[in-house]
Length: 454
Image: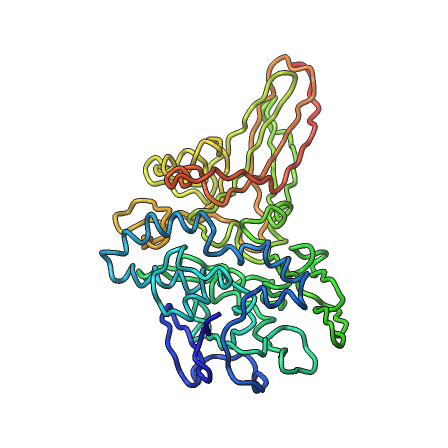
């Protein structure tokens, strides 16, 4: 296999530009790292790690990190829309190169800031490999974003486990902090508009103030906090033929569940239902609490121009099913005829939402607009945010519904609230000829409401 870098050189990437330096003196390091005892060498393919870290590699191979470049959704938007637009726009062309710094970092690091095709990628170095995160030594000031990591390929791998270092392992505080995630999960496009803000959302939350890092949720065995704390497995991080790895009280899982992981989304938010009588005869006031206290960032987060979260509420009895529409809330922003937090009432909803989201549902989302004022699902075209009513970290929000009990009803009413999530709508997948995603039920609550014939 050909070498990936020249021996003795250190590779830095900054804001989508690959440059070779003999040192990275401007790199921000949260703590001083041990001196590397070996000469800088090329990057290792993930298959190299399997020999000693078989379980960790197996987890990683199931992750979205492993498929960050081959992901069909990324490939479709990148190849079919972004690159054709970038061909005539130098600024957008530079942004297209920045996509590669996070979606295909090893190729970006070794081949330079080029726009590349799927066929040009070395399959052994595809996606966010093990070596990417374990050779990041810092990031370029002033903040981590847009793939501005500093990466130093070496036989010594940096990690979160403390203890005596050796030729292969060295403790790095950065690998325990959310900043290492922020280098790719925080982004500003070529218009200067912030298109990803998960790190900022976390910084502004109580989770950050309590010292709860991204890794505490996305790298523990559950994928979320249990009783406010992460639950980790324990044991040996490596299985070696010669010698024995030390026992560790905390082992990080490497599946990195997130927006594309059903296990991460299911149960992330809780629902509670309460019914109250009103002064109007036969009218019931239904209060539904949407509880995001388990999440350390807004929901949904990440590529918020695509992510959709909505609440469906129904009342059923005998052979009748009533769909309860959401009422206008303080988060609604009318612009003539639109109420963006109620599905189907927004002036751009035919472009943004497919039929999988029932009209009248309460919807939690952000809407970006391009320079013509039109809503866009292409973050690289966005220049402003038209609307954002997403659930903030640890927020509890109350939604109100009113139900008139049908005349002559003799059976009890079943009130059902279902919170659903989609990473992107069918209007987006239809545009690129992709398979429609399946909605994930995040939470569901039912309540039987006694009634009497009127």
